[in-house]
Amino acid sequence: MELKRDQGVLMLGINDLSRCIDLIKLIVEEGTPESSQSLKYLVAPNENGSLIQVNRLLMADMPWLLNGGRLIRERIHIVHPKIPKSLCKQLCIPKLSECVKEVLEEGFQPKIIITQDPEVQRISDMLHREEFNSFLDSLCLHHRAAVKVDLGNFNVCYVESLQTRFTLSYPGNSEVIDITRESCGAFCFAVSNRFLLAKADLPPGISCELAIAICIVDLFGIDRSNVTVVSAMLASNHLHFNSVQRALGLNAESRQEDELNRGVPGIQLFSIDRDLIGLKPLRYFSKGEVVAVKSCEGDYTYGIVTIGGGGNELCKISVNIGSEERDFLTSQVYYFKRKTIENQDQIEDLQHKFEIGSFGEKMLVKQTDLSDDSSIMMDLLHEESNKSANQDRSVNNSEILSAVQDLLQLANISLSDNAEEMINSNLCVHDHFSKQQERFDILINEGNNLAGELAKTAEVFLCPITKEVMTDPVICDDGHTYERFAIERWLVSRRTSPKTNQQLNSPSVIPNHALRIAIESWKNSIKQVQSFNNSLR
Image (cartoon, rainbow, N blue to C red; front, side, top):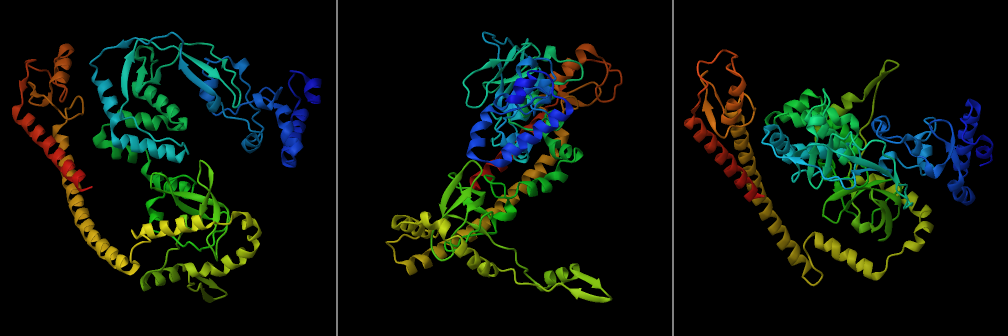
């Protein structure tokens, strides 16, 4: 604060700037109660090198908004770029995206334009597609955005214009600051399950899909670097969705994204780990170990042990599950088994991979036993050191009884039943249901294969103009079939074939009844296959 009084609002010199940042780091590293209390009085340099109170600084994670000319920059204090993000987090400096909200101008009522534009319907249909929503879900997962994407009820509406304002509010502070310089300038805005699109205001080079894609990534907290990808998906045909993903190189990154998110607390288990979870109520769990727990919805999610324990008795351990840190009984925490080598061919393959030469002699890395029992000695070593940490985390009788009931419930056994009889009965029932499940799986696979074959025939039912399956096919003078409304609109201003670009002798069209009947039959077949598959699930 003394430097602040001396410096005022003037820009720090290069040496003063470096010394100031070093001093802030030193204060944070001290970590004493006194220094923690003094953080609210601490000042740090903003982007211009002027000293500002830390609780008024923001991290610039939305440069497009800062540089768009719609904000009053004098009311926003961005932290100096030389202050690292890790230090910003220690200083509790929030992100710009966490503090700034865009809302409709007070009293402004968007005038919706009623239109039959097929482009609006096509984009709305894509928003409703499960494939598109799943794709957005994967982007949210990659960027750790804790939201579930569901655009099934969203539609696109044209409006004459948009007027929005930006407000700024800091965490823990009820004050709301208007930082709007210009209320006009928004191209798309999401409100009440609608994407309001001011198409007439779109500048050259910005398509409807691009404007909506920008709105979508901002709505779900996805990084803006994915705007072009989302725009391309919106502009594509759902039948070629996978081809577009391959062309953009998205499928190649899926494995890396999976590995990046494996083990992140709060994220659902990937299929590669789902078959490896096991339950051992008396197992020792060490600090930092990745585990699995059941969520309220019944799904398995990753967690990280923050306070370990267990080994000889049932006890409580603390697990970070992403949104919070919770206490669990060791009977409620699943560990991950190590993969084992199943056959001799795999052993020989691994031996070949690990065979290396040294001084003319070959050294072979010996196969070691990677079974779960190999961790017993490590568990025993950790047990003594954690006894004192778990003295106040003892388990009472009611919790033990609850744990036993939970474990028996996993096998559908109750404490009041004859255990041996119930176990045999449950095993027989389990075998019966396993066989039934196998039959269901075979039927579902056959249904999926049939649906796939039906989908391949969709190419012949696509209109050359709209690239969508036709509902009212008509034959044009060029001999090709088109969607009625599309070819009639085409012929209003042209007398050439959309397919061959040759002159047409007549603008009249003839209904293609045979193709319409084939399309309806094809649609009914797909619905029947889907209904059959759904009935088996």
